[in-house]
Length: 540
Image (tube, rainbow, N blue to C red):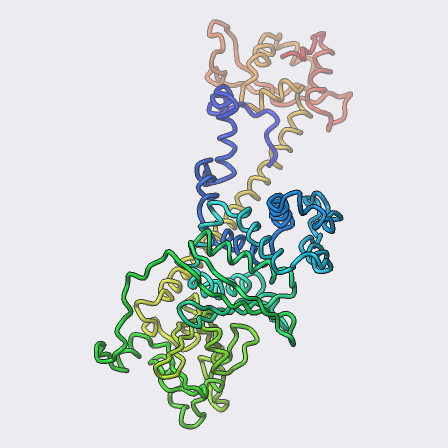
């Protein structure tokens, strides 16, 4: 927006400028941002745990930075002492600083060097390095990020599977031939866990042994023994057999009674409470369906069969083999299912309706229970799939997601309208500024710069009026060309001396015969006054 060249400073601006630079800076900030962010709020944001911090913590396990690995290696070599300096002389070619080497595979180089040395046990070396890596990387926020995954190592590993899958899905939801990293944790019994880990980098797999030991010891006060095995066929697949040696956590809660007589709940009650559930037998055929699924395709079970593959496409986890054992194996991972169009001759509104939930293995009946809810965020998606709000149970957060999504869309529409109104106002202001520039240019063509400025600011040029008033009127008339208009003395500006007598004449126009008609009126007046022996005073 173009500023007026003669704009008078406003009172508020003068006060702020006089009050110091801080007040002026605060004024500018208020114009640019509607919400003021203080230093305390910024510090709170840094300390508040969020998804970004959780992702950074997990990346320490799956893709540690060069700086973190180098810091862990330095700490390890210091602990080894100078007696083993010759033993690790093979590491001398490594760069002393990796700060500027953003694309350098420091860990892979380290792995290749250690692998070629017969004097170094690669398993023990990376075990110790992983422990030093975690010890060096842990801080208050990272520790809270790890602990939020679970209350013990078992819960940590089982939750790591699902959380890591969700984080990867958010970063890149495109389908790929295989996943670069994946966790699958299975509890063998209370003391033994089995973790399957897939990665393209063997160094990460070896480093993960020590990282798990350090996390178990530092965060959960648990001592573990870990045995690492690499798949002979698929070199990307590693299996960790984890044995819990000791743990300070005591199970104060007794195990629930598994007898069905203590919980009298009928199938209809369960289906009403969880309308979007189903139970599969070992052949992956429906044994039980919730009321939501029954309303969508219950009438097709007799004609299309009861196989889950007929009605659902498994979109997450990616590339999962549709078998009972594979589904049980990924029970700690969120599942995303999409309803297929199985009745080709009829219009099926629920086609492509997505449902997100979890698979639960039921050992007492050797079956799988899926409990989920529609994966939608608005009323349009709900009604477009042939559903109603009443189809979402009260305990399901999907209701809130739908209503909040509608509210967010309404606010977004209001924001767009406000942006459009703001644009139209700015366009109008630009048009006004353009007209102002024309007026300024016109005043400069008619009057000297100082007089044009006073006119632009709204000041009456009293000096000019007084000057013309004191001229002998007859001399002006005889000169010719001066066009005057007689007016009442009430037309005189405020402050005009009341003791000066005479008739009030206002000069309305003047054209000098020697000048072109398009010449500025100031030149016409100056030439006319010179003709009658009067001098044009440019200082007025």
